[in-house]
Each structure stands twice: as C-alpha cells, then as structure tokens.
Amino acid sequence: MVQSSEKIVFLTIDVEDWYHIPSVTGSPFSVYSSVDEFFEKWDGRFDYLTEPTKRVLQILDEFNLYATFFVVGDVVEHYPGLVEMISERGHEIACHGLHHEVHIDPKTKIPLFTRDEFRKRTEKAVMLLKKEAKQKIIGYRAPGAYIGGWMVDELEKMGFKYDSSVSVNSLYNKTDSTLEGVSTFPYYPKIGSLDLGHANRRLIEIPWPYLDIGGIKLPTAGGPMLRFLGARIIKLGLKQSLKRGPTVFYFHPIDISPEKFPKIGNNRPFYWSIKGKTVEKRVRYILRTLVQQNIRIIPVTEYLGENT
Image 1 (cartoon, one colour):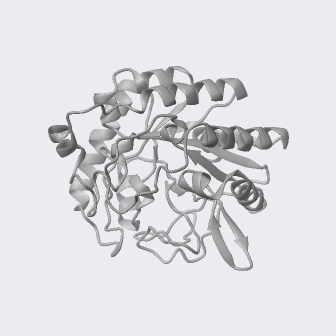
Image 2 (cartoon, one colour):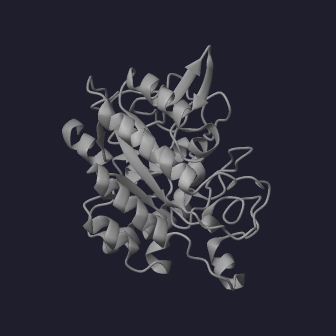
C-alpha cells in the first residue's frame, strides 16, 4: 500500500467528447455500437471538445497547476494537434481507452472483450497518444470507470504503472470486485481482483474520494457528481478523504462547455442538464479552496516519481 502523510490531490482531466459517453457510443445501451459507427452515420458537427479543452488549459495556467489528462486514443485522430497542445503545456498524458468503449457489462460486469482484444485496443491507444504527446504513457482510467481486475492485470503486463478508476461508494460499484479493504488512498490490488492486496505488484490503483455520512458513502471525485451534487459536497468529500491519504479530483472539459450538445443518447435524458459556466465556477471554487488550504495539487507522475 502506498501512503503519504502529506495532503495531496491528484488533479485529473478526462478528455472525451459528448458522443463518447455510454448513452451515445460504446456500451450495450448506446445509440451507436461504436465510435466508428457514429462517424459512419453522423453527418453533423461533432467537435464540442476543442474549445473547452483550451479553456481548461487557461484555468490551469491561472492557478499555476499541472494535471494528468486521461485522453481517449481516437482524440488524436479526430482532433489534430489537441493532445500535442496539452503535452506541450507540461501536463501528463494518460490513457482513457481507444474509443471510450466500456470493457465490462455495466449490469453483469461480465467482460465484453477478450483479454487479447482489450490489450490490442489499449496498445493502439497508447501508440497514438505516445506519438502525439512525445512522452511515456504509464497511467490508465477505464472508460466510464467500468474496470475489472483482469483488466488491471493486463495493464500491468503492458507496462502501465497505475490505474485510477475505482470508486468505493454506496450508490454503485462499477467493478467486478467487492472492493474489500479499499478506501480512498492509493493501494496495490490483488491479482485478478480490485480488492486490497499487498505491495508485490508493479502497478498501483489510485481510487476516488467519498464522503462518509453515517455509513452512507457518496462519490465525490468530481465529474458528473460535481455537476449533480454541487461543489460543496465535493469539497467535503475531498477534505474527509485527505485525512485518509492522497486522493483524486477530476472533471471533463465538456463539463464546462457553454454549448448545447446534440440531443441523442439512450437512458440519460438529464445527463447534461447542468454544465457550462455553472460547472466552471464550481471547478474554480474547488481549486481555489485547495490552493488556499495549501493542499499539494499535482499530476500522478509527480507522486509516482517519489514512490516507485
């Protein structure tokens, strides 16, 4: 188990566009079975990602912060120069899958891809990101945060140093494990599982924070929860989790986009009901609070450089 007495928040940004979410592409309940099918059939504007990503970079510059950007591999192909721009600003580039497709069934947690298929897709994403960013890709976050223990085993074989997908909470479990012994600070998972293991691996898991209210654990890493629960709940969850050890804050560039996205997507009609300037203010509030409290806000690689 990796622990630190210093208060650390890993600042992470998930770089994906509106059509990457599971209700539109890449899941058993999506409108399109894949991103490839989306581009074959979609004839309208698709890029709602570039401008808010530039805005995120401006915000980080304002706060003098560096982050880990978990980027979907196909962003390299459809948004020329975007990944290069992020990397040139000094930020870490990590992998968020090839097309943001989920790799385990959201309900049953049964694998949707073989290990070989998962490895080949992930290796292609790494190749694309590495070439564009001109840096090593050692971090992974599962699309939709749907992660299986077998996936972590394959990531370790591929040379990844960490994964950051696990969220312990009382509302859902997006993993194929019980998460026994897992809290909110970095740990070594068991082989074939995401339960707490021992320090005999080359890969660590960096789980997300939660706010424990009388035994009810609310997920407070950010992302959709930042949009739906608000900044103060997220702040309380981060504060509580920091007492246990290093933890994570994340959001998406498209969370702060003021534009209206195309109205397609299954099962999630209110998913984008809160976003834009409202969420940007929340992001700024969280970052400003952490800075004022002298919390160390860093990309994951900065931490690993001291602990590996």
